[in-house]
Length: 327
Image (tube, rainbow, N blue to C red; front, side, top):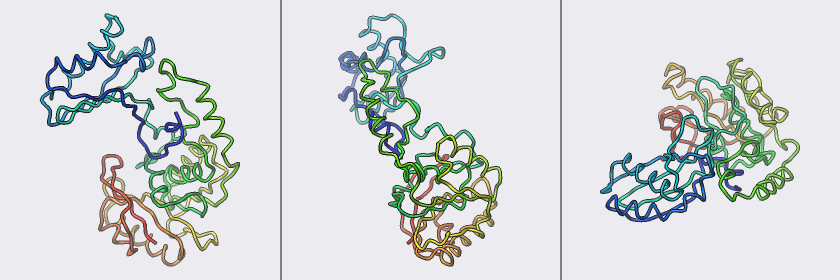
């Protein structure tokens, strides 16, 4: 419960259900029948499986799932299949990973992926997931103690995640999770955790957080999303070109941004110019500030002419990107 409530950059929380070795379907069935499936399946909740198998004798994922469904049916003495029912309101996901005949079965404790905070309904042309926005801030060691600027804010995800961090707001405070519906889940514990989280929140951001974009529609979406996240008063959103970016008189801070990648939304020549302009502005107007950004191509990062180091590699919308920071 605490992990689901507080993790900002994780995709989901998995709870290990079982781990065993099986090289035949008979072995798989024997082990699967020993799993306490009822611990994770409330009455009326269907089981859903995500199975992967690599370098194993049991390679057919559909056949593996079939045996697991049979084990659930056997345990519950229920003749009805326990796979996902399109008419069912809820289902419980089990993630099954098989590598070299070693089975790991985990129950998804999150339900909807953790980037779905609930506030982002209006999105721009190339949105960044909430978890990726938070990951960039965390990797850049930004804790809400210095000003922050996103000059390509789009629908506002990075400034909103920054405001949540600055105000110490738990990212999962406004949503529910699969583990809360497990048989035996203690709602009193959950309410205690929520109460503790609410008590730890700051009433306002202690630092200036700014988001700007040259697209008026994107800025309007960002404001609407910030209002749903209850942090609209903590962020200064404005329609501005990159050339108008302002340090607001601060000598220290972080520029955290997700510029265009030159893959979908903008011509490559325009994108190269944007990265070069970002570097020029960072040196001329933001001396003393750090710069953290996502880039899909090293040559685009090089256009900034900033001295950067890699933070991590990931994907955004199916595009491989690297998070870098410049100081």
